[in-house]
Length: 528
Image (tube, rainbow, N blue to C red; front, side, top):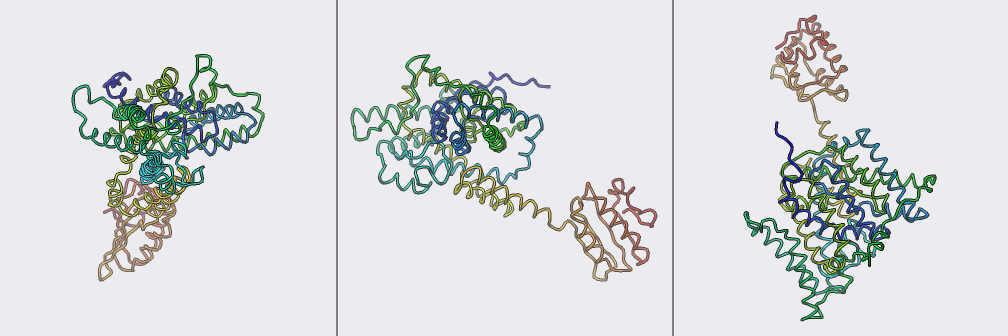
């Protein structure tokens, strides 16, 4: 039996991937915190905890956790409804404890019942949203926060009107030039990256960040009209010294534990964060090139541990996040060491080089996310789902459209409803086929799949069509299970067959399964 590989066995792939994820995560952490009405640094804390703590606890090789856009509305409302931010931190801690309870009660199994068409629809929708939401940032517009998935934005615009607005009043030539150059490099690098040698590990997004920083500095020297202002740059809180940095961290107010609103917020956060994490994890397993499967219950335990610590030191809630996870997969990560390292890079960068981070244009990072989005929503994905038939294509498209025009969680719920409708419809298709020869002397009744209670009426209806004076074969060879009510119906038919001159045969390979329950021998029924 082969021994499991060490976490350090894939550092050549995981280190470059971790840098890419850290670059993608940085503006998203800040954007989610801003939209949540929380201190900006609380998003960084959640990103660090999601990388280091959840990364260490989780068994997922590729999932990346951190603050999620899907929780912004809940978090914003919770902070507004509680007396202090410290009381909200207590709710985050309690939510983490509740997630541990979910893990021990095996609640993670629920994710296995999500149709694959909904999961791929979620991935395609996120890809489209990344492209549409990042286009304004690539053109110089910064009215909405980084990482939003809502169709209606806090600035009064929506996904499409923001693009039109960015082409007019807020258009910045400097931002656009950096974004175009960055995108051109990323797509060229995908094909031109060497297969051997040290350059094969060079992360394209890191080059893009350097293009953005030095390009903007060059604009400032030779073309001031193209220079990108502070509002379109990363804005990490800068601490003057170590004590000021430590002051960014906060602790929960445990005296608020008797406040019923704290418990309501905690339960809401626990349920929604767990749902988002499970769906994200399911999606990551789908795009994992090696198709590894992650223990969902253990993931809930990891997420719970992450939220407990995040709340204890001042961070907003963490979940598994599909955008960062997709960037991780796309960057070629092999193990969870990439996730863990990205948390360390976030910590070291905000501690040691925050002023350098604040030189990065958002348009450069927008280019990285646009390239990631394209890989999630390639036309090939839509064609493949269409070829699989309407029962797969319709839930897929509905999920895409619903997420695009609402938000991530509402869109997924709509997709789930439509997906389950098709699943139920497939199970209500005829389970039994019936045919007779022209003379009505030879008939066959075949069960196409297992017969459950819901198939009673269908079985009765088919047996009622069997004419007198004929030979009938009841073929149950495709079943592994026949409900006792259906066994009773077959028994009743066999008993009546003697009085109608009907010769009944049962397929022999079903004999061992249900012959003790069917009165076949007593009625002279033969096994075929």
